[in-house]
Length: 446
Image (tube, rainbow, N blue to C red; front, side, top):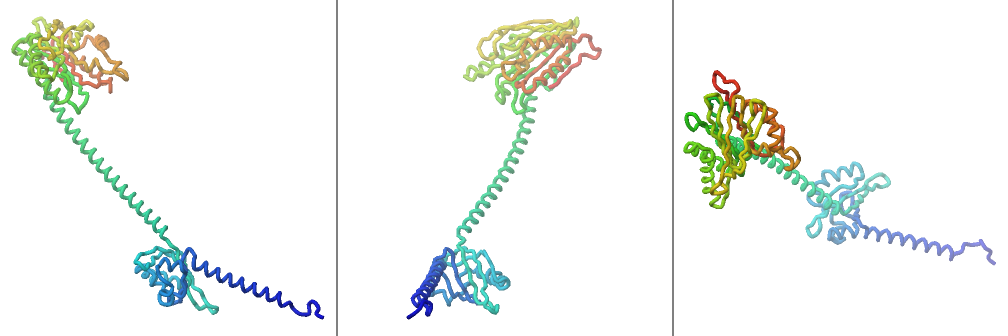
């Protein structure tokens, strides 16, 4: 009779053995399957580089079969020319020295001639006595990384090109600005010369009378249309005029030139103020308005005749121009109204209003264009300086000689700042309060 424990149970021992064997086989099968289908490439080489083992993943990348590779190719045979050179000069010596290298960027050749960027990690396996036996290498597909790096490089190159283009554009813009500024200065100089050619270079000395003038140019880039002049018509009488033509620029300059020389010629032919304006009206109407291009001006024309008693008689005619102001020696300032005078050049037969005044010693007559009275004193065109304010200003200055009046008005014009956006001409004539033994002083300024 057998008792428990007299002998081992064969069935139980055998079952455990079979289970262990099956488990070992399963592990080996799983490891091999994982090795073959891993997402990265694996290969093992002998120390001379001959490939002893390679997984399916790497073979598929290369487009080769196992029998084409194992035992017949070296690891360097898989590399491009540049990769092979780098392997021989850097990779292999460092691996021998350190025994392990990780994440080295190389390129492998595909069977069809393409290239695949990879990251290679290799480790030397040693025997029990410390001798190197083989090299195990892991290969990672770096296509995405290479594409990312190439994209970064392209973006960097694009950014560099954009920066260079921006620098070139900035340099061109600066050069264009410098050229435009130089052109503007040349234009301003040319316009200043042309503007001066439309005005008398200097006012003549009028016996027994002081004169002063000022011209404010609103924009150095545009020709203005204001004009003035003083000149003799015979041995005892002097003509003077001041006005404003329509528009700006070259057309206004042409109109100014025509107006000025027409008035001079008319005054020598017939010095009666209304007759001079009538002649100008005919010339402008026939030249422009009748041809469908209406051009006109406002103008005040006067004849001054110094008297033997130290006074001076003034005869004026006005065509749509603001009234003159007389500053009296007793401190008063008064308008010399010429209501109803039409713009010069609009109608073929235009009436012109006349006025007369006598300048006693210490009296001054002031002519001005509407740039002064229409200067803005507020943010909009609803706030203009106006004739009432100018008359009050003149009363504060009276009595004053022509030079003093013009100097005070020049300071007033500067005070308007940006509100003075139109050209302004000022002309003052006056009889000195005390005759000068050397003759009258003439103040002429632009």
